[in-house]
Length: 325
Image (cartoon, rainbow, N blue to C red):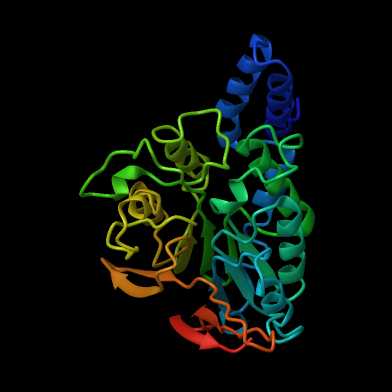
């Protein structure tokens, strides 16, 4: 009655985990998958109500920063996050374009840490968050169960996963995504021997259906009255001209070209993406594409390098300024 399809999905998935022949649970899971993209539950309505919360805030008082590949559970990365100044960015907004952590527990700690340092934090999961790590399989029968749990976690921590205006005429639009082998234009077919993301567990075809489903999850956000400065972001690269490392398997799992159509439907003037680890800042066909992964180096004495944050909106216009943390 309340449209809580995500929780119902997880219940059906757990039932199937116990008995894979349970056809009633299988049908229930499929129905939930078809209904979730409507985002019409009560909690989804609360997320939508945040859309205009800061629409009257002067743009001059807001800066927007972007990062990806935060990998909170990697050596040195937690120290980097904790070294962000406690008060310097409290009027500002942070975009996290995925791969904040592998395990759910580490992700929770990461999001709590950054949420305390910024006025608002916008986030989409990357491929690492979709991995079912050791000891998580009983809690998350598949990666959709983990995704819905992450969505619920973000609600609890006041992390934005739906679009919103962050100040007058400035919008941030998160876009969920998954890779499409057609990103490799020279050989646009899946590699059957690929071991990429083998720790993720999907109940639908991961090559042909999954990326389409992720785009469908974004569709309900495309009819908002976006204008002015619209900053979209995703984990996977949205355009084949975004540089990636040349290995064939890497290109096949780096992006989804259909994302570019979606971000342009949202009138984006700047798109932040993650995953490729190939830093990039360039305007292409009227959209500024930015990839700024966190790179942490540890010195012999154990100290951690303080990689600066990239500011992509400075209160007046789009920019690409590196700011000490």
